[in-house]
Length: 143
Image 1: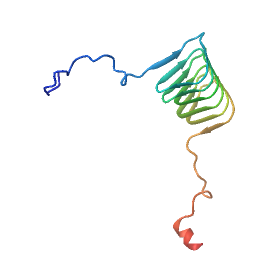
Image 2: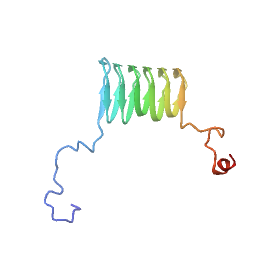
Image 3: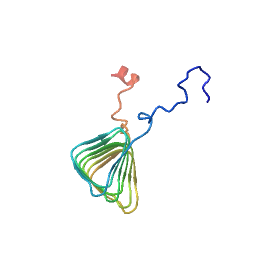
């Protein structure tokens, strides 16, 4: 319709756009999985997973969901239970029904009232103390 070239294939349906459509992977309530899960797209867990869950996108642990293992992703919303190390590059959101037992490494953290967390937390980019910074050019000349 808007194509001004002479390409006759323009405008034809060429089947589902596999590379363009983000996939959502769902592990439903009542489902139990043991092993490692890796995905390029979003994952929603309402069942139980024993093992590492890795996504290059978002992981949502629903209120009936449980992960007994490590979680690695870009963003995460936790309403269920997680037992393990959680590494989130951008935003980790602990909802009011969420329970997390393990260490957190994240860029940003939001904790709703009622959420429970036991472990250590490292958040944001580590800033260097003035005493840790490399000596400036003027300081090097004085030495």
